[in-house]
Image 1: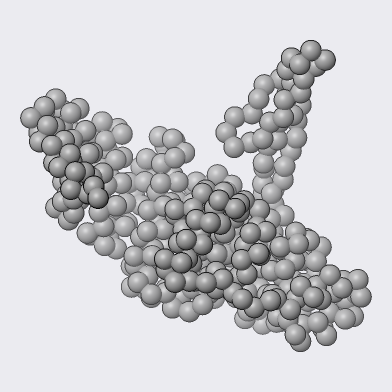
Image 2: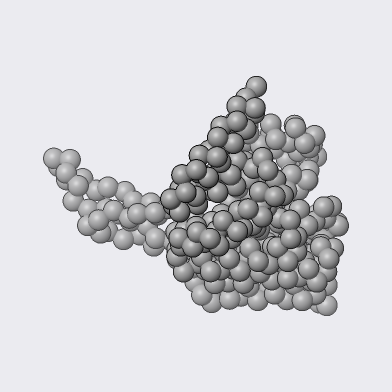
Length: 353
């Protein structure tokens, strides 16, 4: 999944598609309809699925035949509709339709049908509903163009000179966000071994740019992984090779933190790397993360210590060897720099077809 374009990864994650096996419940056309999924990304996804021998669902969703009539007929007919469809299916279709009123009504009936709140999918729906409601887009006319991921539309005068910009800014309503996180926390209390709940919260915090919450949840996953010995559950049952799954995703989170270019988060990256090593002392990615943090702050001896540990585990890791060469270069040790650069060239040559 990490090989897919960024917008497509975010689209899949927002639809609770975290791994390839989750796609077995989805039709190809439904995935393609998600905002952020394009034909290029779909081709790449299908190639990955073919390699992993995974297929899309071939079952047509019965809800598509009835969902549009559901609220035209009215609430009195709602209970009849759910005999052929689950609340979860109805809510997922309402999400695809981007119909927030329909989502609200489904959740209300769902809550009435499960008074003891023992349905994890209800909590997930409540989280998704309030999180999507929290997102607000503000448009302003300004004299300069927005940077980053925000959208700007140039406004021209009669001689095609820019007179201003219509800039959009994405904000998140704190009250709606609080409601979303409240429901996901309640779900975590009832189902502490459901890893998708943790990952959902991390994803939401990242979307909001709330890296204090983002980091704390990543650390919580690693601490809980050590506590429960990686006996994690997913929506479709127990996770196989859960430790590797956790560490690979946490490594992706580390990359996301790194890409913020916020120096204040370097200590947090170091803390996450330490927690990864507590879970698996031979995790070369964690050793490299720690080395990168020290290298970026010019603590070369500390950086070299971690890179050397990673080298002992995997002597053919070109990234690790390159970072070691960089350390020696900054130290002014031309002899050792040349030694590692020669090893890199030799390995690159041996990897050629």
